[in-house]
Length: 449
Image 1: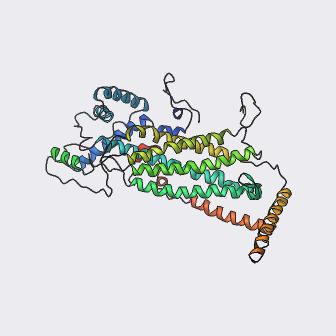
Image 2: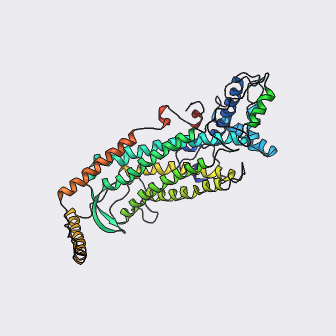
Image 3: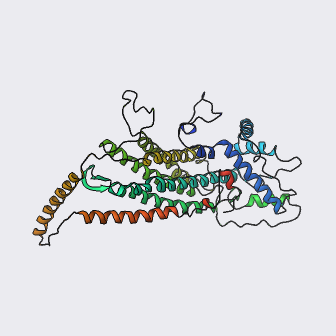
């Protein structure tokens, strides 16, 4: 939602995702301040790990960025950017700033044996995990509190005209239509849970220039007071970077969620075009500068626009795995800085607007139910006559088509039973994210998964 962040200059170009679209939580998760905190936390954990192994003459010390305010971290980032102009390497510039804020007298071995990809990939992986878990929670909330709540509003009795080819077909209910969205979203939750668990297995995997730990082993032996065996316990492999296939899985997950919500919002827009529904009108809301009285489906239109944007952003993930030459090329580096934050921030905005859209979803009773029943019978008779002629030609038994109150009740009961199963699946939280409270990606650094 529209919100100008503190300290954001309006003199130069600002991305709409820095102030107009996205939730505050998601924007902060992908902020430069959060990125610096993650890099600092990773370096500190790595150095303390080497100290625990006795590999370097060093005592453990706390993360220097943890106690600093956001304003202080912003100052450190500005210093790092000045340093980058000289050294031409972002991670080295950040490391130079980090090293100046360690405890006095402590030798800095935070980057010993690591590559910039080791550190940067772990920071981005932590941001991705946090963001996926955030979306998981928001989708679950949409199912239980908005879409699933329709059953308590008597939606099984909210008749509407089902349409095929956008033409009137047969009567259906608002509950049945919502049930299709809920079913897709609960399936998405299952997929998200599996991918979150798979991604978590790559946390802490930092294995050097080509993935064989040679850099780290050499660094340990070079600085150790006594020979030590470097323990390799990782059960996953990588090259210089984490497998970009992981981000392709994430992109597919975001793409699927965007497709589900695009369809739901587009259905709403079609019903609005037929004059069967309208969005709630906030106080002082202007529908059009030329026609202020209009009630346009602005949330539904915005959802669809952002969903298509997410879809196109996700194509970058395919390119990044396909164009990654041998152990490492930089074909992925620049676009990952843009598409990952934008895709997640856009999805957070989409879900916020979806909550508003489906909270007070109302269908206007523009057609009398008796007319629907009449149309249903006419359609059935037309179908019966066609099949009857075919049955006579092929000497097949004729079929009888009936539509009555018992069939309606049976259909509604089936929908309610399936709805309850979907809601129970959404209530059952499998993701490890819900086992502890996490307020930011930085909190994940201290958790053992």
